[in-house]
Length: 183
Image (cartoon, rainbow, N blue to C red; front, side, top):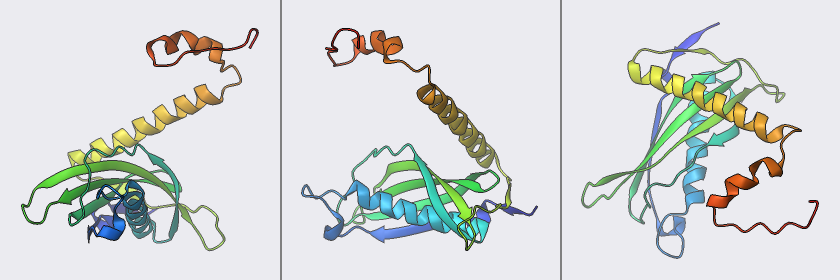
């Protein structure tokens, strides 16, 4: 098995936000930003694996700050974790107001990408060479997110999952339950 450093596939991409990328309130569409994030995740994963990659899942997309027309958006992507055929690409999105130099953290997200061959079959990816503390932390956090997701899926997909077990939990939410008898 071969190994590659995280730096060898790290990518930075910048783009000026134009009116065509905005919604009616003059803010940049979240969907447009997601599209750019998917592109950089693909490029980063493909660079690491040296093959075509597809998006398998996206974990946590929280838009922290809005992006304005005229802002310079910079996305930084790196492979944070590798499995046998998959990689987790961490992406940080920042916007810069060009006239003032103010930089805002807008989003951080994690894309799971799977390497594919020409027949659409999953293929093994190179391992990672980790050479600093922040890279170790990112790898460990990716493992924890994967474990948490597996537990959540196991609970939700269980044949034993029943809404009855959770009705009491709903009392603190803004919801009124009006189920018919014997439901």
